[in-house]
Length: 353
Image 1: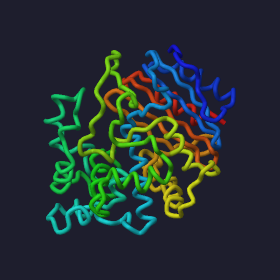
Image 2: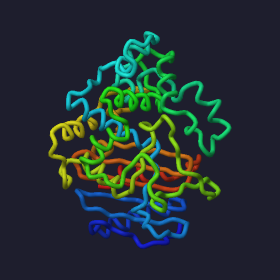
Image 3: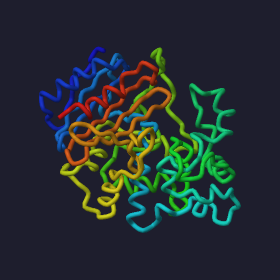
Image 4: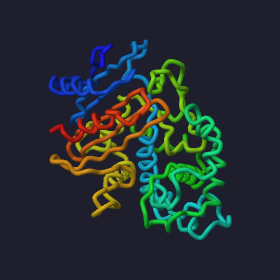
């Protein structure tokens, strides 16, 4: 891969980290690439890519996070719980549509089940696919609005009893978003801004496309551009857009000792809560999860991370609790079978002392 820009730093990074990021970037082929590392608040950011850089520096562009939006939903839920506005064990159907007749299994689904992918719901509603398949590579979600997501939930027949099996579900996390909006009487976008984005100073993070020229453009595998993602009614599961610098700010808030730690008690409690392991799954319970992060062991301590992909972009967020190390990475090429992006970003998190 050819670097077409200098490697900018927001706080003077270390030469060793700069060399590490430059070497890692050679393994990723994408029109635009940003690899960003924070060590106790000291940031090193490497930008590059095969495309010509635009007027806005790559690290100041907003990138689609896809499923890496879910940690934002998790932190929001944890803060509302810390404030006493909802409980993890609240039943979603009771908050979303009180008194509405639903399947007994749906009645048992709690906010915790929705967030931890243990609700028994499928990855997407069954009736999602007929409208999505004809436009799978351009706009699969835009034709499935919020009210349809809610209706699909209320008439659902979960595959498994809630709380018994883990199955990754964009459907479930989207329902969580609509449920929290109903419980608080506040639209999801406003609620996220009030409870997470504004308190953490995430001024360059949003859930809709920004002004012209400020959003990164995704690309298919062959390099042709794709339109901006429209998540329809699945906002909570994948609509967040952020600059790499804002991603570092978000991650730094999760690491102990980082500059600018929140002083608000409910936010501090939420940041602690989302790093606590809550379930194990798989053979010999090898896979550990917090409320919203995947957790893996490393020689340097546990790492928490989440990746995401949209029609033409990828993102990776990760940190090591208690060490001050955070890694954020973005790329503007659709994921493919031999893709090295996630492995490269994960390696920065797990192989770095």
